[in-house]
Image 1 (spheres, rainbow, N blue to C red):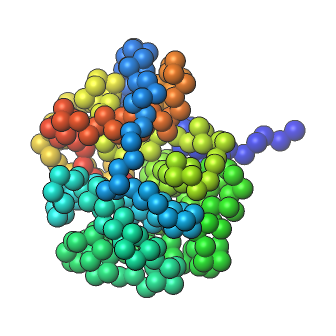
Image 2 (cartoon, rainbow, N blue to C red; image 1 turned 90 degrees about the horizontal axis):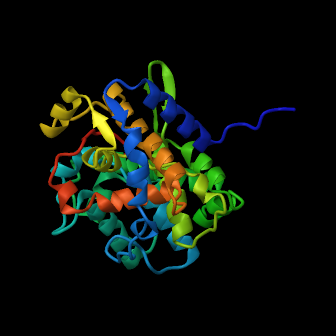
Length: 313
């Protein structure tokens, strides 16, 4: 009898638990888990659709393209203080609003056009300076998406989704192969996969009705910087004094550093513990959504959060 190969999400869980067990700068207060989980009911897991940042209409191909293209550039949080934000919008919402406007006005980028996209073109879409470092990173990610969809999936985003045969795990694993969705760090010589955006794109496709994934509850939390911030402010994650001071001073964390990996892994593992304790039966992905939405409240926005400049989140 042979063992069943570990899925991508199994690998994320195992690596995050391993890091959390060895972490020196980020600790989980496991005694706080049960009470904290009790306060996260189903209503906290999702909010009403936002037409500014979500594409609420369009055929299946258009909605599939939107979820994949937006998540391909759903990074840059370390740069948010330096971009031109739209009035009342965060950095992420500013980017999402630009992509929504593009899709509503001109439809999705055809894959051949994506393959030729440059920094100037994406900057115009997002109303940003074409010389900003994020613009070339965004363009490179979207060029990779265009290349993969055109050459491997007959130029169809729907065909990419259908190739997963109704499995969230299969689609996340497919996207994780692409440079556009790369997200693996190293900790004490061991690879630590997170694949935040590959998993989030999959969840967004399910939420948008592009596909129905019965195994969606097997997705992990989507490791970024906001969810660790919320867990830290709420006392679930406890940080070493030096890391706490660096974050409060607004210092950038080096991507892949011990502290940065521990923050992401600690959040992923804490959410696994919260899911196990959730009387409402919330999955890790649903808990992640609840905490991400909580992080938009003034209490959390008024406090410095971890910042790192990278293409993972």
